[in-house]
Length: 415
Image (cartoon, rainbow, N blue to C red; front, side, top):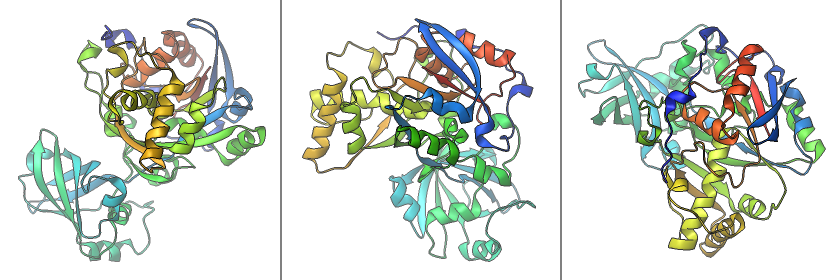
């Protein structure tokens, strides 16, 4: 049954001064709000610092991180007339697979958001680099940029988005083109241009696989000190990879959430992790961030597809709510592992549009580490679902006790 949810019920007053515009000097110095369940929708709240989080993680826990890496996806171009056009790369179009696209050495196409789109008439654009005094690009970047001769051509357009073809001449891979030419796409609600510090701080320490245009921000708090403490305690740490799209910032525009269209995000989970999740029994699973939650909870429905259709496919946004599912989590994940083994695969690569809202049944996630999210956002809906609907008490406490909000803000653990 489709959930009957109104986004106006998930609103709260967030003063601009409570939005963290910059990160703290030390990642793990952020505040940590510990939310321990006392019963359905009831919590004991305790103010801690993030470097104390190992104390809240059981020694036998399986902790899951998203190791996606933010790419410098904002490119600036100029028309012959002098008009400036921003091209924000969202996801690869041709080649469609991330690694293959990043390896392209002469041309590729991306789905992009177009800034100043009405002024682009379809002519070929040349690169424009707004350099700043604290720019962290290589010292020889000017020579490399000249050799690139990067251009952009509009292949098709739909509103503010379009398919853009990039061409360049020096034979370097497109991943290097972005490193040389692009800027880090910090969230729009920071109301500032990206700066030198964002190249390092809008990235987790364990970021590995290029592809995101937004950071999995719950992971920004982890330092080597915290990771070592978790490892010393015996906590097993595993990675998934879900590339975060710009849709994570899209507001829910219709008051009836059932009319919201959830964006697609690709993810990869190894067979080894699927086996551990299948066999975890009562072992707690700790998801670091909402992107890890979306990945983990999508796996059950991918396994259902294997059981009922013979193979996994993309998970639709309302799939969890359309009917009752008779399969256990072990049966579902077991079917996924069997399908991978039959097809000689070591990892599951899939896409998900899953939308987690109140009423969702969590099948794999037992504890959640997450930041404080925007009013009327899909991320706040997920937090509400995980807290049994009592997000207001948690957010009111955070507002009353000086917590910093959003991507560079403070953190919470809900268990």
